[in-house]
Image 1 (cartoon, rainbow, N blue to C red):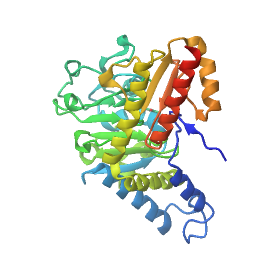
Image 2: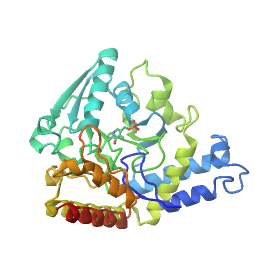
Image 3: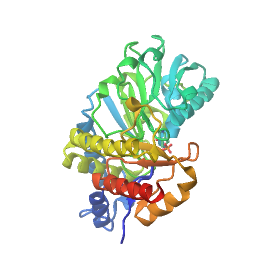
Image 4: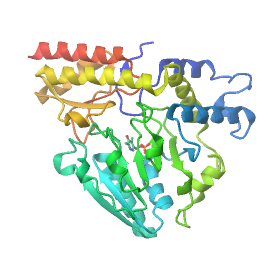
Length: 366
Ligand SMILES: *Cc1c(COP(=O)(O)O)cnc(C)c1O
């Protein structure tokens, strides 16, 4: 077996000890007589699995008691539609666009608002600057009467991260954040947010699961036509089990939460993540051969897009990387170039191996 260093943006690498435990428990989970995939979601065994997953997630993020944690299906993209259904209530929402994902979110929300009533406003965008920076504080103006404001705090494709949400909080409007690609990568204050959501397949676990953390007072604003499986209230009242939840994905995610706890929690993983990102950015900036165009203050710790100054070498770069066991470095098709996604499961050694390869490739083609 030869596991590579996997720089995929998602579905992404998982911690090896988690995969080993999954393999170990695959045929029979503890003394259940079957695998997690084969057991009733309402039985005692799975109940203990989902309860432990929720408790560990709450502990990692210090989620206050007046927030519900939901384990849902449909991915973050489905949330783009569910959020206005549940929170807009015929009112107005302010959306901030800082990359490809938040641009999708606002378009979807506008489509829903056109159908159910309400006004989704594009409050500010950095698209004119090629999504190479985050918003300046003075660009962050929120209507105090808005039902909510929406932001993507880490743009997976453009490699732009929000490092300070304080400017979003002054209007006192519930802030809804798409944290799909950096949840659990560093400490946050959950009470800054009305709602946090994240597709699991970047920094948590397998695809097919999206985590929603929502303040209880926001549960009763849904458009009356909201389907019950899309209603935060009905999912919250049914412990995320109005229908069958993605049981295996919840189980694996729970093991990742436990792994994170064993690493020392978010403070510890944040230190590792900062060291990893600094290593790669510093190398790129001083290489003379590679370039990252994101403004320094907005650079993501998780997704690092970069280009070769001589793009005619792209194919050779990727072929050599594959040969060296460094996989999935090709950038998103909308931006081209390369991208290294270095989520929690990527060890510092993986980043060192990437930097070594990039250095050798540069010397060879200088
Ligand atoms: C991947 C991603 C999404 C979409 O997630 P799906 O689970 O594929 O719907 C949305 N937002 C961000 C920031 C992402 O990285």
